[in-house]
Length: 382
Image (cartoon, rainbow, N blue to C red; front, top):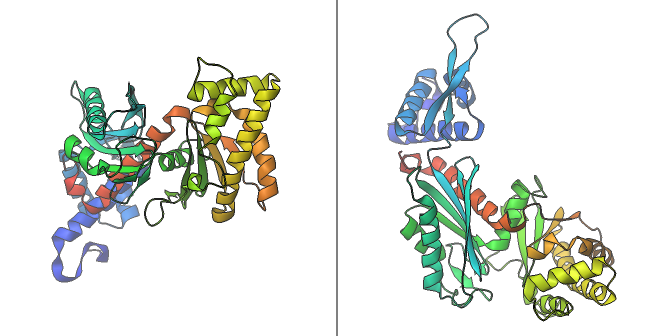
């Protein structure tokens, strides 16, 4: 027996748990692989790997995935893959005026999306109830079970997934969001500040793929910041890291309203008015151009402070206004050049309104990976 297959004290249960986790994670991340390949990579004996693969097949988590050709003409070796259709993941975005959900298989392949508008004065209980109903509605008709959910919402979210403070969503303060959703949906749930999920999504799937240190700025009826450090959302001690808009010096709380007021349209409000201002600026409207410059100046002040503090490798501008506000990039760059020592690459989101639900899916996948490592027997079917 190889030394990697024995533990001091003879704790064979813990050993089987560890070995199963190694094989399961390897197939989830790098499959399909043969028993021989799994044995070489993990250092486990072929009989041990074969036993683990057989057990995992019985749970429905593994499936045959073709055969490797053998150069000597011998019997082809069977390859095994993690069955990404064995379960589903959900990325949930609970905002002030609506709920958006994205469903994928366990590999992150999109299966469906849905949106449910909400009255902005909806209470916390209704907001949670409607979120659960939207998820369950998409799950109707049978199919694979829900394995994990990643949910994003505006505000300061603590390590337990509870909302400590939210200005944007009424009656949201103090709601143990992750716990309530987990109890009602019967699966692990991680609740994260929405802009941090967007930053994670841009890092893994969007405009800053592979960039581990990232500043994400949300442009909409509010301005918010998401932070990514070493590839993971950074929250600080209490969850409030990045809340630069709180500082009165930068004027972030007033900047969106000033931009929207420059639209001159009594029929449009909020982000629709902002889109009109950006359109006017593109077509030479001097009042609109001045409003865009003012908005960019306010944004750049807060962004500059964050750049000096965290020295990110990239800045991504997202949110509803990013779809129409490409001309804001240059004035922000000019102002940042006056504030910072070096201006990081600055770009617009590649994910638009799906950034937060995409980040939710990635967070749900991380929950699954963690469960594979710590408790593979507690996965559905395990």
